[in-house]
Image (cartoon, rainbow, N blue to C red):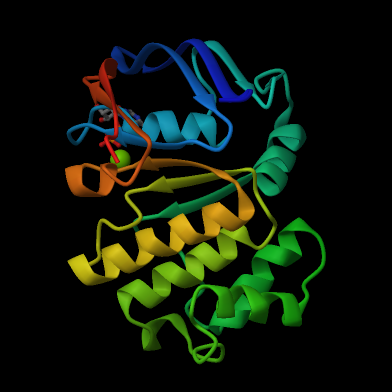
Length: 224
Ligand code: ADP
Ligand code: MG
């Protein structure tokens, strides 16, 4: 594989006496789909939030695209989140009174300039061309998550992070969302890091790492 998009050394996050993430050395090659597994409380979200620039570690280094992220001030970190990263969560965090297309345009607004045609195209790509004017409450869970994916990829991130994005979905919607991510990744060539506690979901990745009580205990390459 080519160059590393993520490199950590001794990456650590403590909350007082609780060590949520124990010193972690991790390399993620550009273009990989990495799954992060572990029980509840094992540090999965902590790791994802550090990589996404939503939180700062208490020790260690974190290089993104070869550049040390932790030297950045708040503005620099905000720029990183805006330009480099797309994130999808278990909860959709869509604005309830905005339509699907307006929710996507909001993400464009924070990045640069809203462009309705572009937002519409993004929703068409996730199969929601017929749901542009619907509000989140009028969409199924799977559709809401697809709006989130459109919102996450609208600014062409190099890194797509998911924190249990299919955690609230039934099996059919889960497969639809994962297939969509696989398709988009082939076209856009972004790297995926996806937290899940579901072995079946993890198997969609190229590799799975396992966290246990904040420690990386095992890793495994997918067979397919
Ligand atoms: P996971 O996502 O694997 O369920 P988390 O990363 O959310 O686990 O949490 C890992 C550990 O860190 C847990 O013990 C949790 O209680 C603790 N933790 C997470 N966030 C905070 C916080 N803001 N303050 C104190 N403890 C926290
Ligand atoms: Mg979590």
